[in-house]
Length: 266
Image (tube, rainbow, N blue to C red; front, side):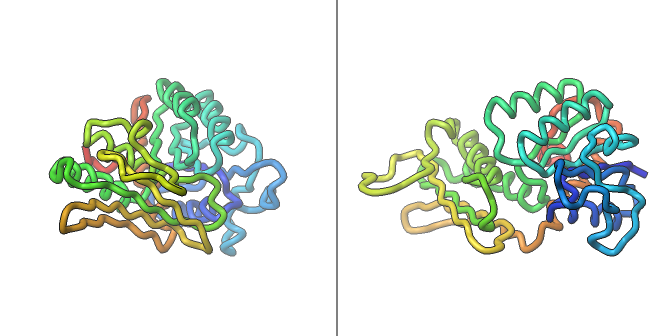
């Protein structure tokens, strides 16, 4: 059995991860973490689902990670970085699905990964990661004659924009074109913008309701348009992908891995 600890255990994604671990036949919930002050602290980690796991939700990183082989973390950047420091100390491998990191924070994750096997991905969904591969192939095949736009939609509580997944798509698109997203990405349009700059990659963001996550990339050419899209109806696909990543990490040497490594898409 693979011993897994879950961070953010009181939130929607944390609960989805706990359910996935409990439903699996080869993983065991060994710890459940949440922020100080969370109403979930002290409760059984399976209480929300009417299940008794014997694992209490705790804010103590050392207690929550004791006995864990892998931590799955979908929280906030500052929390994730604190978790990784303790994972590195205890030798617990880590899966990071948190988004909204700055370039400096991503560098900190890479530094931890030099001594800690870590899967870091903007999106743990198997479908999204297959889409990233398709975007790379489409960009290489279509060449420079197509304008590229990325449209993403999420629930009204999401705090970062564009989404980490949309940015990951933009990075794939820019690399396939041999360009740089920082230079060629267009993240806002308002007023008299002038004509579209050739080679730019545009982004549009929608926030509302309870949209789990939708991403569409448009390749707009003369006389035709190609759309590649992924729509999530549930967070369960993120949990399923995270468990695949956890199994991949078991016994893995230190290093920074992506879902393309987990799914052998390279």
